[in-house]
Length: 433
Image (cartoon, rainbow, N blue to C red; front, side):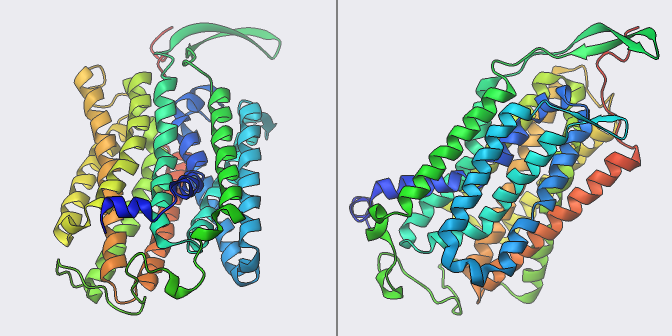
């Protein structure tokens, strides 16, 4: 099919609505993650905050689990459930703009309970979208699925771009702080971090606006305005070749997915997800903070951009995917992982700390780590989708191993950070008296 005919046989406005729905899939948690360099300097959890966010994101998988248990009963009300999740996500984003800095005293210690609770709600919405949005998009002609996936990629790209524009507040200044403790005046030297171009509050307002736009788009997508682009029966999807899920898909490039390769790729999927979704994000503050505020911000935000870009690359260049490519990219990602873990373990005095090359090397390592493993995960999904005899069953197992790996990585990192005492936070004012 030519490009011109492809555009003639589709309504581009439906593509826009489908992409907007995809954007809402993970934009909130992705957006919140880009703010961790700011949050870790202003909330009492400090550098351990990242591990809390990662753990809450994994706990939030109770959302799709509950939906899965009642999916048959909820299927007739699928659109209402999506409306409900978009409502919760929008309200939680708006409340985050108001209460992100509020704290409460629990057990004699100051805790950021409001932001942690709202993070759990945001994560539940995003996790549940994984089992809601794709089945809903099956109601439309298959040519609109690409627009949805592009939107899902933008859910990581957009907040990273906004965060890049937000900039950094600069390196901290050490300030002498006076406090009254037990009736006596005490002085401590603490770091004071300058504000970025706009605050976390403004960032959350922008996230809320994106969610509102996605919600409006879904409302129109679900209305009679887009009725002509819906699938009326199985034979109506004649715009693209359809393959029965029980049948093998034939490709020009020969790749045989035997049992060994099937299990091997699932193990790689679990390992990469344990690192990218669980362990490594939790230690990012320990790895990056000693190199300065700019390095920390650039590592977080540029890595956030690398994720969707590399995923798109794997999707659009499927002919180049092979087991050799997966192995090479996995090995490269593990090398980057090793270097990053070394910088975290040696905090607060990691290698090349006071050298510009050290900062550039660390930023490059985080971009390479994120990009290589994002590409690996996309390659595995593509191989299973295109070469497994039962593609839908194979992708189900990819999802299972994704969640098992992610949850395992989050639990391990949380325990090591909270109880292991092997990661030491960086204090820029430690040597000032």
